[in-house]
Structure formats: structure tokens, C-alpha cells
Image 1 (spheres, rainbow, N blue to C red):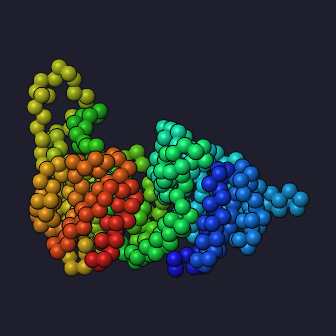
Image 2 (image 1 turned 90 degrees about the horizontal axis):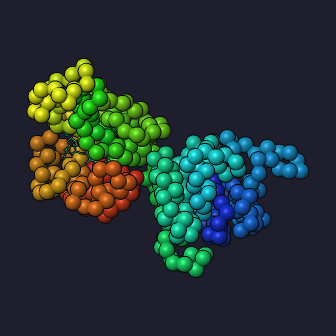
Image 3 (image 1 turned 45 degrees about the vertical axis):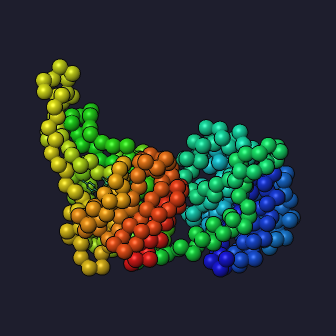
Amino acid sequence: MTNLKGKHIILGISGGIAAYKSVVLLRLLVKAGAEVQVVITPHGKEFITPVTLSSLSGKPVISEFFTANTGEWHSHVDLGLWADAMVIAPATASTLAKMATGVADNMLITTYLSAKAPVFVAPAMDLDMMAHPTTSRNLATLKADGVHVIEPEVGELASHLVGRGRMEEPEKIAQALDAFFAAEQTLKGKKVLLTAGPTYERLDPVRFIGNFSSGKMGYALAEEAGRRGADVTLVAGPTALADPIGVKTIHVESARQMLEACLKDFSRTDIAIMAAAVADYAPKQCLDHKIKREHDGIENIELVKNPDIAASLGQLKTAGQMLVGFALETDNAEANAREKLLRKNLDMIVLNTLADAGAGFGTDTNKVTVISQDEKIAFGLKDKHAVAADILDCICKNL
Ligand code: PMT
């Protein structure tokens, strides 16, 4: 682990039995050359003493907003600016909930809310709490906010029950941080143009033709490219997602608007990645009033072909520019993807198929195969943030 040397890391500890493993994590981070500031919740101190933690980190442990006897105020804002990364291990159900909703009633949460650096959480709790829809909802919110979730393992828990909820081992958490810094800045100086989400093609003021894309895949790519130092422009169709931090996001609705936005940026772009699910057809006419049930002829909506954004950029592409497309298939997946690679003049195509459970639209996970003229790499089912990292690794390798 050579990439942690000199990094400033906030180690957040909340009140769970897995806090004993945080001591090992702290030791590993310090041994790898990181400067670590421990922030522990009041309940965390019930499980592990600040003396142990400050002895290992070489810094006083922060828990309260003020030091009681001196009145010294601990600035969560300064801490948030100081850190290169924040890792909360263990992250209890309560801490995850407070993070997801912004309940800033302790120093750990105020520090999280002030953190400018990437944040990692390693959840740890009993299996029923882990499986509860509230926990899933909070984790989904945090993922959408860009928090990296180091998934818990299945194993024996403090309750002696066996199930999912065991905090990942300290070695693995340290490795995840090391890998994060290893991938850093590989796109520094590069301009990346991304499309994400669906397009909506209006029929009338209340109806449209669209698809099930949530934008998660494209947004994960935008976040990951930004994290690697790229100057990212994200052209997004309608989604419920928050704009990624540090990414210029242009919101569009239709395929034509998406094309227009892409054309404005493409000549300055080094890498264009087309993750949007663009509607291939639009109604020939968009009425200015709501179509009534009784309206004659509505059974047959006349459609016109939308522009193919990826193919249009493929025609404009010059030497030194890289164009990456996606292929969403249901059958003849690889053959169709290869045909699109050639027809759209792409350098690489990312194939995902709805035949794979957990892949494609709406899910937090995806399973992709990255195909270029002379290479094909198949990846397993992963969280879309990890998939984004795999795709960008392939792109960086071919730059
Ligand atoms: O958004 P999520 O819910 O996370 O789901 C992710 C995803 C399934 C939408 C994503 O992974 C994906 O596969 N995106 C491409 C979907 C698609 O439209 O595939 P396609 O095979 O129809 O299109 C091939 C390529 O041409 C794509 O890069 C597409 O962006 C592009 N295209 C298609 C039609 C069109 N008119 N213009 C285009 O640019």
C-alpha cells in the first residue's frame, strides 16, 4: 500500500462493536504513511477508548464540539478541508441515517457534512438492521450523494447470528483507500463529455415517449472521471439524481437538445462517453394541449427518427479524440454491440444486457463487457460506481 503515504485521512468511528477493528484499521493507515485524525461519536467511546486511538494516531481524538475544560472549539470546517479522504468504520445504522438526512448532532456528522474530500463508509450492524428497507434507503441516498460504500460481509455477528452486516476487514478497507488514491488523477488535463439518463420526447404537455434509464450509470461515470482529475461536462436527460459535485451538468429533455448540447462541447473534448438511453423516435408533432381520450386518430401516433448522437459525433471525430458508446441489448448482444461499434465509428463500446439479472436500467449494479476492435473484457456484476471505475480503467489504458 504505497498510495496512502502523506494522505490526510479522517477516521470516523461510530458506536458499534466493530469499533474494535477500527484500531487495526488505524494502525494499518498510519503504517502506510497516512496522517490520521480520529473523530469518534460519544457512543463510539463506549466501545473503544480515545487513549488507545490517540496513542496510535499521534493526535488527540476529537469527539465533542468543544473541549470541556479549555472551551477549545473543534472546527469541523477546517477538518473537512484538511482531509484527502474520510472513512467511517464502523458506520452504524444510526450514523448512516444521520448522514443521509443531515442530522448534525455530533462532531462526526458535522465533519461529514463539511468534508470536501471523498467519503467512504463501512457499514456494520446486525443482519435484520442491515436488511431493513430503511437502511437500504439510507445507503441508496448516500450512494447517490457520491459516498463510497464498502459493503459489509456475511459472517458471524455480535448477536452470534450469521448473516450480512459484518464490517469488512480492516485490511480490505485500507486496500480500498489505497486503490482509490492509486487511480487518482489519471485523467488530469483531459476534457470528458458524458451523456446520461433517458430522453423524453413530448406528445403533448403531459405525456412523453421515454425509457427506464435512471441516469445512475452515466452519473457514476461523471463522478469517477471528475475524481480522476478530468474536466467533465455531463449532458443529462431527466433524472431524479443530484448533480455530481465538481461536474458541469447541462440538463436537457429531448434527443435533439442532447445532440445540440454535445455538439457545443465536442470539438474541445478528449473523451466522449455516451451512456444515455436516447429515444430513437419522437412524435412527429407535439400538441400544445392535452390529447383527449376522444381525440380521433391518437391510436396511431406518427413518429419521426431522432438524430443518432453517438453516430453524429463519430462522423465529426478527429485523431486524438476517443468516442465510447454503450449498447443495451436483449438478444444477439455481442454481435449487435460490434455492429454499433463499427456503424457509429466508436473506439470502444460498453455492452450491458437486460438478460443479466441486476444489469441495465434503474439498478444500482451493472454487468458490462468492454469491447474494442482488438480487445474484449468481461466484468462481473458490480455496483455502478465500481463499473464506472472499470470502464475508465479500460479507457485510460487505451488513451
Ligand atoms: O441510467 P441507468 O438506469 O443507470 O441505466 C444505464 C443504461 C442501461 C441506460 C446504460 O448502461 C446504457 O446501456 N446506455 C445506453 C442505452 C442505449 O440507448 O443503448 P443503444 O444500444 O440503444 O444505443 C447505442 C449507443 O448509441 C449508446 O451509446 C447510446 O447513448 C447511443 N445513441 C442511441 C440512440 C440515439 N438516437 N443516439 C445515441 O447517441
